[in-house]
Image (cartoon, rainbow, N blue to C red):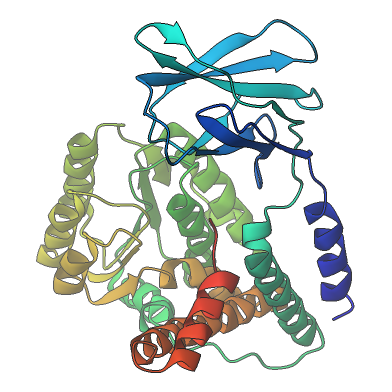
Length: 389
């Protein structure tokens, strides 16, 4: 609450800022009332205009919105339809006062212009429509920091067992017993892809196991930058377990940037080297089933994982273990048991649980609100606090 209350006060002060509102009436014009005000919740440069028209007057052919900046000559902005009642004028300079009037036109003749309306566009620091979400995110951040602090103090933070990651040690041990290498495939995307980054983290843990057990590790890559990163990660892992002499730089190589050329090259490695354990973790597309089927044909135990929904079914069908979606990103925390990572993961899980409850509660109250007004109010409140518009 010490964080949330000052945040609310600050948001209220900023929300109270206004670029000015001017409204005047002209009973002799077709447009009787014209209002100008700074556009809300924008980055500045916008003025909202609204107007009302005389109910008993004949409709003109068109209306022209004119603008003047601090006493300059009137210049047309746009043509309006007689049935319009709202317009936003954008791309203006913040801090300048702009005056507006609407001139009706009939048979090529200008009618009496409306009264003037003026406003000053300014930049809003806070989007008032997102204050509820700002408060929720602040509370969630505090929950994440709380779990991180609990992890630092030595509290055991429970993480659901992930079968594919639990099997890493067994897979590497099996390769060691059979005297065959471990093949690690980090996907086909570059290092700017979040799944590739997650894959590199897991590669470091796998490399520690291969160094500890003395198993050869093969890492064919599809991007040159990924190759360089993988070489450094594996080298560091071998140093950490005290086996720098076992590190072989040439075992981590670059094949090609071409999608199916890479798949063909990796399949060739599988057929020739016959690895006992294959890890396919990262971003995969149409080559996923090609790789998984070849790995299965050589009798390897396969652990796959990706956040690409269209490829997960292929991995489930052809591999022994599959990391589904976010399990790939949770792998670093699961394998390292680092308090900061575990605390962050627990905090994110708490946030997901909160939004799941809000969604279920929102659906129920919106449904009941059709027959019971208080439920409709609750549904509207939940919609408001979670709005990002």
